[in-house]
Image: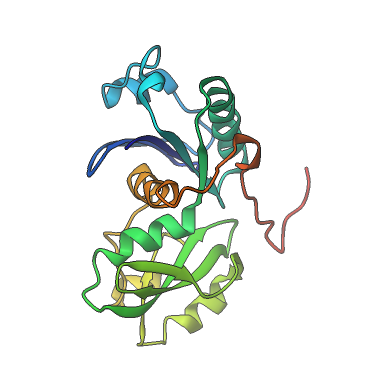
Length: 219
């Protein structure tokens, strides 16, 4: 199976090409307002954007939460390609992808993983997951939490923490997995697992997710 995945969440752009069990990934950080440079991303992994889509089994992207503008650009770009090339398009949560990456750094077969991604000032996108051997399942709905609330979660000792949205105190927590970062690689791996179920992933159903924070104001 061959899958091309993208994670353009705001302050970084990441692309992966999965071919069976091998994954080639490139990730570059940048200003949150910068638009993705598609040609540079494709070139970075040696992907031929003129003919390479013909050899794919599917497309996948990080659908949020994150920078809505970047997510919308990515979704629109891939939807057009998926429609023309008749490819399935799998939308994967950014929070879930980080939980998946974090699970590789955990020896325990069963444990909770709390993931937080920075949102607005003093707020973060949050979701909790249960690792059960090689499966990762959400045990809460994705939402927005105040940093004060996240500080209280850091007092727990029966779970691991991942993501960039935690209070600074997380750096001293031995259960913090600083190595678990967002990228297109876990997006591709999760997409492969879902495509193997035989489920249909129609492009029109692959939409970005935007969680409004409590302090959100429309400009």
